[in-house]
Length: 406
Image 1 (tube, rainbow, N blue to C red):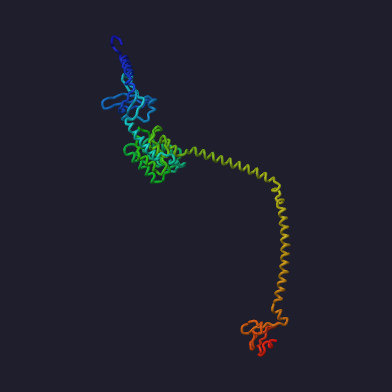
Image 2 (tube, one colour):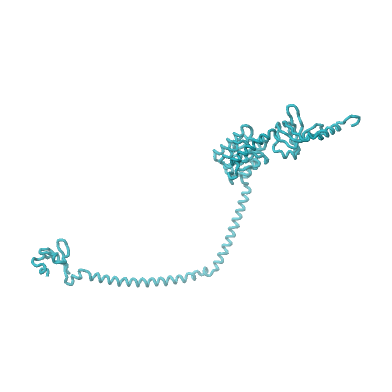
């Protein structure tokens, strides 16, 4: 400063030192609406914070911007933390932002934690109830917005990795007041149809408010009640929603969800080729072992001359046959002699033989009863007397019965 006259640069540097020397201005929180938002290729964020009366320039450098848990958007209400400084080339003061959150995050966070604690106590997050995903799904349902990058990315990945699966899009609102009901309706619709093997529900990144539909209790219970395995793919990897906690599997992004639900056809083809090679190698090895075993068996004397193994048994069969024939002849001879004796006995007992020796067989003519006693043939009784060459008809005479009989 010469003669009490400041140059622009001197005044700017002085003001900069004053601002940065004030401890109150080095740790400030400013609430305002994002305006003139610009994301530079370097990763730095340039924007303004405004209210109904004033406008404040702000910058968030790449290191701090990468740690934000939401995507700042034009017109979004936020609370920014940082220090005030002065940008010398333009001579304007600005907020150097080190952290930023959507305005109202505290209230939403409290709601999130309260619902999380209640559903946890009910067992909706229990690991033992989570279902495994089908290894080779035939039909995959996508409950998401039909527009935007998320659906395009998922369809591209699914068709590239596993074109055998059929993809069914269920158009769903994923942001706004009507989004929770739309998500619930889509999940119920997929469950009623029963054609899908797995369902992906989610959307691309956004602010906490944008993703809040997936933190509603009705959505959590719809995911829990869905009869199909549910994969939740909401926002970016750093975004955690109630839907993620209830789902059978949480994917960090929609693209990752598409990769998780289907196998990679290239890996499958390589695996099948490896299995085929292993099978061929195994069969060739088995064939070689069997060939060596057969060669050893061919050298066995028993197999070279099998008759030597059978000869003793053939001789035993001949000896057994001869013994059996001799035993049979002996039994037949004994049986013949026994039959002769029985025939002789029967011949001796033949009544005709007795009659040939002078005996007679007397029967009453009226009833054919044998007469063995005198009393059985009273006088006048008609009798038939059988002799060796025929029979005689006689009648008992009167008088002494005994005398008449003799």
